[in-house]
Amino acid sequence: MLRDITIGQHIPGTSLIHRLDPRIKILITILMITVLFLVDSFLGFLLFLIMTAGITYLASLPVKRVLRGLKPVFFLVLITLFLHLFLTRGGDVIWQWRFIRIEEAGVETGFFMVSRILLLIMFTSLLTLTTSPLQLTDGIEYLLKPLAKFGVPAGELAMMMTIALRFIPTLMEEADKIMKAQKARGADFESGNIIRRAKSLIPLLVPLFISAFRRADELALAMESRCYRGGMNRTRLNELEMKARDVIIFLLAIILAVFISLF
Amino acid sequence: MLIEMKDITHIYELEEPVTALKDINLTIDSGEFIGLVGHTGSGKSTLAQLLNGLIEPSEGTVYYNGQDIFAESYNLKDVREKVGLVFQYPEHQLFEETVADDIAFGPKNLGLDEEEINKRVQRSLDLVGLDYEEYKDRSPFNLSGGQQRRVAIAGVLALEPEVLILDEPSAALDPTGRRKLLSLLEDLHQNMGLTIILITHRMEQVARLASRVVVMDNGRIALDGPPERVFQNQEYLQELSLDLPALTMILNRLNERGLDVRKDIFTLEEARDEIMTALSRRTVDKEKGLC
Image (tube, rainbow over the protein chains, first blue to last red):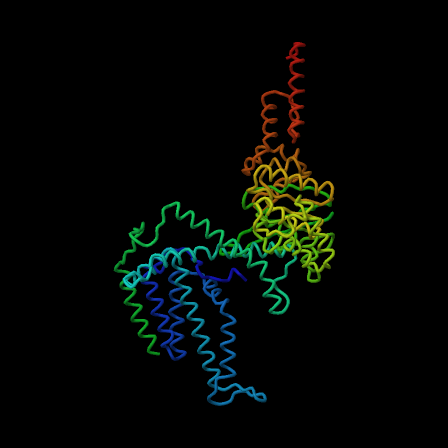
């Protein structure tokens, strides 16, 4: 269950998509999210899906991995679908039982919203799957830099994100281990009602928090002993460099975005 | 025979499936003290987790007292009660406000009554050598590392298991802590009659305590037998990047150099006596002009 979360789970590769400048990738992702909210037909979503599949193919990502990223939103999707099915009114009545009824508009908006959520998650997971956390935060830092004039601590924010992303898999592993250890003491995480199950998480969450704080402490010490001072005047080992390739792909993405959002 | 692992193969379904165990057949009798050794990634920890049903094998099954623990009708809680598992760095699983509450977590999960739980908490704290009155109300997070570990082990002992599996229990302990822990294991084995499986890469511990050594390599059982027999295979063990106990190494070297000493000795005192007698034998032989 804990392994399904794909955030920050980068699959290294050498494809065109992998080598693309992270800034461009982030901008394209933001662009495509906007597109998803502009599209107002299933045809548009289909085109978007084809594009997503195309990128997945180009990046030679395992389809299974991309789809697995959808698991955590499964309940959200289900709830969205049901709410729309039963609550959105309009059009012919398709099915009725006493006061519960499903109308045409409900089915349509239901599936419409679900497609939107699924595509949103799929597309954004492409970014994290093809970009290493380090590159990702580098990109974010560059993109936030202009805001430094207004007092946004871009460097610190980027460092915070790098650390957070870096430690997600570590904490997952830790959670898995603690869960097993408590299970070995007869803990039961799977049965009972919601309150019981929430309570049963205490033996998992307390040690997890403690270990997170311990790690944070150790990391802070390690960083300080290497003279980390944050933000100002930090230079980097690998400067990001925009290549002609990146610009061309960005233009292509804009054209695609405009085209898809017309539907 | 208490535990029987039959044709176990376990594959972790990751990006690239990893075969952690392959065709494992292992039987463990009641009262044994087994040293399970092997280098990192050899499958020791996977094996341990299979034994109390924390993970289900891809193929094969485990019998506890003749019952298939992965059968539909079997309640895994039963085997977890009987087979206690102490993970690596067990102090990382402490979570309660007081030492007593934390140790009571296991017994509570077993659904025991208050009185029995209290009795078990006292008994297990006693076993690990911490004074009940002094420690029961203290926060486990204010104890020293070694004490925390003992509290964590008490938490498993409170289940009153028949089999105790410990994964590198002495890692990151100072020499005193390590000695105390090992004598605790010895005590549990000899006086409480527990079957113990000790996972470690410290051959000294295995040599001194275990009645049987199982060496794992690449998901298979490479060697299995009493320590004195297993440690005969010096070259093979080194091939598996495992060291011999220092004593065995010394005795082997002496043998190579022509001193006739027994090689199956695992305590310092005995080894000293053996070497001394061998030396005096040699002097006697020399005097007789035999050498």
